[in-house]
Structures are given as C-alpha cells and as structure tokens.
Length: 157
Image (cartoon, rainbow, N blue to C red; front, side, top):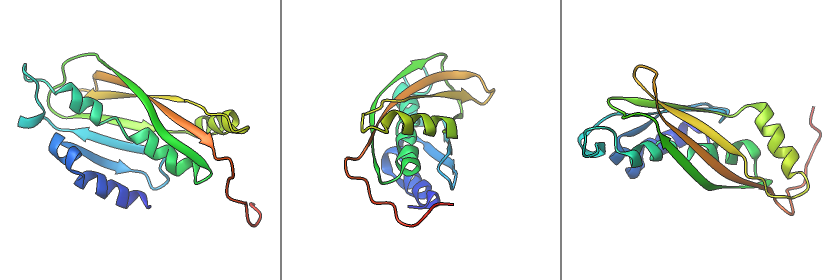
C-alpha cells in the first residue's frame, strides 16, 4: 500500500478521528511520520489537559506500520509492547515525529538473520507548540525472519 493511502485511511479511521489525532505526513519511503493531536472537548482530562490515552494513541501504531513496510514480506512484524512517561501537562496542539534510519534497519536484519525473534525498542517524544516535551513513549516491536522467505528473483544491482 502506498504511504499516501495509508495516511488517508488513518486520518479517516474512527478511533483517530474521534480522539483528534491526525497524520500530517507519512513519507513515501515509510521512514518518517509526523502526527499531531489538537485539544478538543472529547480529549481533555478532568484538569483540562490532554487525556493520557489520546497521547498514547497518537504514538501507538507507527513504528510497527513503518517496519512492516520497511522489512518487507520476508519478515513477521507485530507490536509487542509499549510504555509512556508523562513529563508535563499537555495543552493545545501536540506533535510527534517518528523516524527509522538505515542503521536501525541493518541492526534488525543482523539480529534476525538466523530466524531469531528480535524486539527492538523505538522512542518518540510528544512535544507541545513550544517544542517542550510533554510525553515520551517507547514502543517494542516483534520482528522475525519467516521460516520460508520468498525466493529472490533476478539480481540486485
């Protein structure tokens, strides 16, 4: 699936729409994503700050989705766990930037080369409109090379 269509689908997905979560950018190469959450009547907590569940939800699926596309069909990829630390009350618009680089992908491929599972951790900061960190989420992703990967055809230059 092209990143453009994934972004559109996620922005129409009822849990994200209802929480006020919006995917602003999903890079065509699946290496970066920008997400924002705007304060609304339905995502405030009792004291008027962002509801922590909405802050978590805005970070939840992205590293897994990115790795599904970046690792390809020869790998099993699934969300394995997460934790979030709330640093400061969040008000107004908040955003998160997700990125995966070549070194991270190479490390995952090396760790899974023999068919072993690997549980890499990825952290993302949620920042407010003043670029102040309000939350930090760490996501653990399950990655394993399939037992019978698809045969390679042709040569790679």
